[in-house]
Image (cartoon, rainbow, N blue to C red; front, top):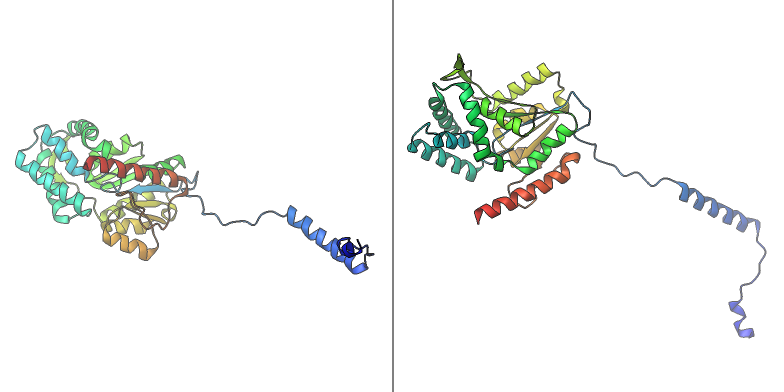
Length: 306
């Protein structure tokens, strides 16, 4: 048994130094258990709820909707005998090119606008507005990108106004904005006299720098602080508009915009495929909905291609 004596703890009297060490250890443990966990940095909430001096501006073609609104509108007008088959073939080619290239060709867009103006000349504005509602249901409703729609909804849920900004005719843009529950739309204005289209434009198409000027004018009229606003687009043509705001987003970007967005550290999202594009950031309130929306859009596209 003596050999096992080393297992029995020896009784020693505590020295002053050992008492001090024990008390210090106990005090440190108590403070540690009561201390708050270290704070982790969080991304500031965006959109900011209740910020009525902020708003969001969304390009339409290939940002909110797959393809170009003007081409879909042309299909609807053809169905209603507004023009001939040869004109439809031109519209179809332009739309196919736009979908494949994913960028706006100025010559194609100008040709489409000239065609549309000649087609609607002599028709009443109210007639085209009514037809626009029908065409939205027929050709546009199922082409809205769910991911971008979620981003717009995040701004609405935060109590902010959301505007479409597009080169498409303002009448079409207003129909789309209303159907999506958005605040309104800025678009190209066709001249009318006594409610009848003349076949001319008021000024020029709302494209490129003209979009930036429209946003600037609306912000001034609405009392908005552009540094607190957001803008979304797929096209490098909209860099002037995106550069105006404090929160620019490249959505389904063309190559030039993608490169510029990366250079400027802009937020970037791509909903055209199931893969995640290079992500710089995303509005916190819309993150889950946007990712889910992008996936749903990819699945829908895949099914249609089969």
